[in-house]
Length: 340
Image 1 (tube, rainbow, N blue to C red):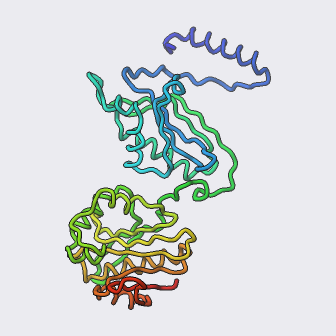
Image 2 (cartoon, rainbow, N blue to C red):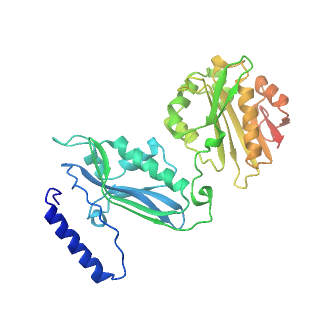
């Protein structure tokens, strides 16, 4: 509709009033919102939203949108919470992703902007327990960014918390905080995130061959992508991995983690600190904080398996109150256990 033609705008408004009165005589209209028709030649029509799955709870939807969304059947689902890596991976699983990368004279769409929409929707699903469904369709995307043309939302009362509604526990931001080493160096401790994979690989690159053997019980030179992904993409409901960063951030100096059993009774721990940073109390600090988190997590016991020759680790275990016993099957390994 051309807003420069006020007579036509008035005629359309009056026609709409007549249709509403015929369909719902009791309805009250307080006014109209009139907007200029959006012109984005070449923009892709996408759909993004939140759907309620009876088994998994809130799920993030993305795909090709428009009036033919059901016919195209090009959509993917992802469990919240999301980050940039997970959102981009979800986008890449659709057929429309190939168009989003650009073709012939059509420039690529702003995929990061689309990913940001999905991340925000996932955050809404975690924060707003009353949110049942949300659709943005169409969501226009081109090289200039994204623009939502239409949206639908459905809310309902809920007595569940965000943690109870989501199939995957959200990132535990409450575990973030600063700490100080004995020499006064301030470090930042926080839970690991999926985007930390390069940082974990860099940490491994700064471990000596001997430290790698003591940590993983086998000689190794590098860590595979699959293993690094497993160590960074964790279920915060049963696992916690705390990374230590310097004040300027961007690199990982050390990491301590535990993985609990299905009953959340006991958990196995592991720890690694860059070889060039050993001897400054970083490992002791990480383990102390990890024990605090494990206790707050409701665990009753934390344990680990340590090579008998790894005296520095065993010395720290003794100082932290771990009991040291022989391994029932492996002579060169001892088991360290602490009640919480």
